[in-house]
Figure (cartoon, one colour):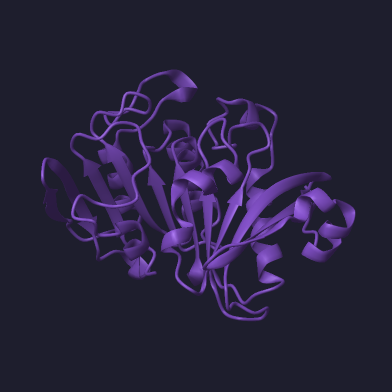
Length: 283
């Protein structure tokens, strides 16, 4: 399939609505289009002040949940406020409301939407302006975006080094086809009382999900990890149980965080206010 990344300047010339530049206290927002298979795809970029073209940066690709958009996810996720001064955050938008997560169970998969090509073209587009290496490129997904994040870990380990999924275990069909040849570190954060994508997983044909524990163990097995370390964080009535495999092949890590009383929600910090997602990404 043909994948073409359109430079930002050309995008602005072709579609003025796609390049609104919005400045904030600590950075600016750019809306760009990227062409994949002759289709323009929408991406919102958050760029901290002080970054110049050619600078070495980290890139975090933030994947929204089902029916959402990159712009809406940016507004509610609270990631920009925690961004370091060398971190660009990309908020892409799914073509059909859902990502092609590799299960052949949603419209994006059935229509063969080239979301892997989209992410590759996104990385290429940012890399054309800044110095971005696979070691400094990460993906973070919420809910159905988390399901797709696991697919990136399976298929794009040569472009992305760390992946985190919030309120999302791994789909069973993806686990059956996942090669995961390249070393990628994986974090799973899940609420024990999640009624949408249950902690215990589901058995529903192409929609089947591994449990959160089986998801982490799948990746720990892929990475030939040494035994895990278990830790509990508490703050008031809130409890977070952590299982961390920190000694895995090629320096990778696999982390599982359980929000003991958590439901299907977006979590960015543990009960003791330790920003564990950014710690995991080394930011």
